[in-house]
Image (tube, rainbow, N blue to C red):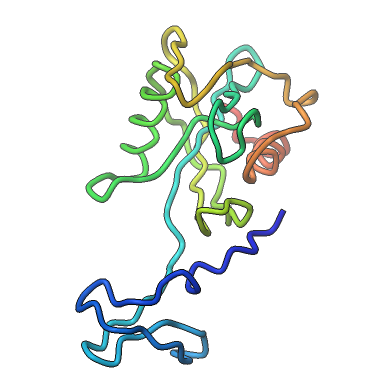
Length: 173
């Protein structure tokens, strides 16, 4: 599902000086710009992180209890906070969502997430090992370790692609 949301359409006033924004081409792309203060709204993708956690040959997935993608399966992860590195963010997010620590082994790759109506994201997807007993927070309703060869149908974001990439490489930790 491609994101058909046009994030620029919902911004009409400058967040800096509150004057009207105009649409114009900037560096070949349609952007909103404030004629009063010169602010250009770039609408860059937001950075997020996820992690493939393997235990006994199976991959940990969480089933979401909230929108977006309620009832879909996802890898643990979330948004990178302003003051964090990607590694710090995935450790925090996994602790928040699943109540466990992680041992990061490496990065599988980066993936453009364009099926989230909140906007475009760039997902940095790590791989590693889980440490501890899982205790979910309110974001997720269930968890399960899946065989990489029998994943559920309803997987959100590009997490299926990341698991496939993980399977076909020698990255396995």
